Amino acid sequence: MVPSTEGVLRRLEERPRYAAIIQLFRQRVEVAFPTRYYKRWTRRLQAHGFTPEDASVLALATFGTDKEGRILGKHMVVTFDQPMVTHWAGQRTAIQTRLTAMQQELLMPYRQASLPEVLLPTQIARGVDPI
Image (cartoon, rainbow, N blue to C red; front, side, top):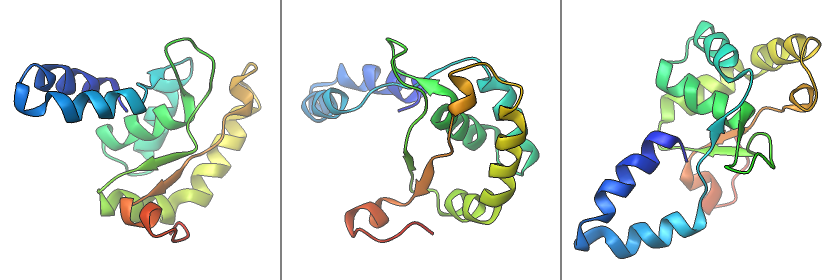
């Protein structure tokens, strides 16, 4: 999850009504932290027509890591934001081309970054192929 969501959940977790479900959720997910090239990639995604918030999430999925810095990127972004999913599907080829060009200049391990799949929760639950 993105760092801002973690902050919201921490505040909600203080309320007994939500504490149990939030604790369960937080035990099963990790916060993605920005790495080198995250800001550059965010700007480039915005140039492809993504909102600043959507570009940030997508950039974290490409150039994000866990708190120990053991991983780079995420395999997928799951969102209820249908316009974001549709826009990603329409721009994916151009975005991949842009990432491939950018990677020629990057240091390792960032040169190995890959794009995530961007899916609706229903696509995960039903096992439907990505858009």
